[in-house]
Length: 214
View 1: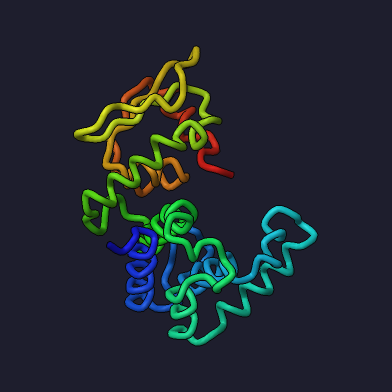
View 2 (view 1 turned 120 degrees about the vertical axis):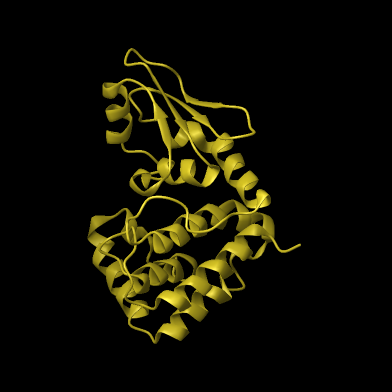
C-alpha cells in the first residue's frame, strides 16, 4: 500500500498542474509557483534552509526560491513530484510520513483554498482523516501551547482532545473534521469549517494567539 505522504504529494502535484503557476495560495503573497519552489528548496537545498531563521541569510534563500520559481512550470512540478534526492532520509516511507504528510497536506490546502473561501474542497479517506487526527493527538499540545485559554478539540466518532488546560480565561471547544482542526492549528482558521463554543473573549484570545510550530 502506498504510504500517505507519497499519495498527498501526488495529489498536490496533480492540483498544481491544474491550477498553473500564477494561482493564489493561502501563503500570500506566494503564488503556486512560489509555493512549489519552497517545497523543492526544502527537500533539495538544505544549504539554503538557514535563511528561514537567520535574517542575514534570508536574501540567499529568496534568490534560490526565485530561481526555482522561474523554471518552466512542468519542470518545477516534476521536481516536486519526483521527491527528495537519494541521500535524503525521507526516502524511507516512515520518515517521509512523519516529516512530509502534514507539510504536503497543509500546502495542498493552501492551493485548494487559495480563493479564501471556507470549507473542504475534497473528501478525504478514513485512512487520511485518521492520520491527521493522530497528528493532532500527538502534537496538539505543541500547536496550541501559546493559547491563552484552554482548548478542547472534537471530531465526530472520536474521543475529545484536551490540547491546552483551562486557564482563568476559560476553555474553548473547537469541533470539526480532522482536516479542518489541523488547518486551524496551523493558522488557517479563516478557511476552516469549524463549530466553536466559548466565551467571546476566550474565543478571540485563542484566534489571536500565534498557533502552530513557529
